[in-house]
Length: 46
Image (tube, rainbow, N blue to C red; front, side, top):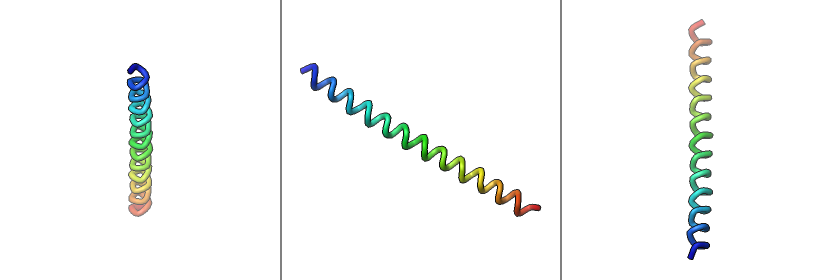
């Protein structure tokens, strides 16, 4: 029975890591686009 719990824990850990990395990359992309938009706005004002 223990092996099933270890497998379940491993799958959950992999799933959690995958979601975490996905969220982090999405967040970084969003912050990058916001920075680019601010740069474009600053250039437009000049």
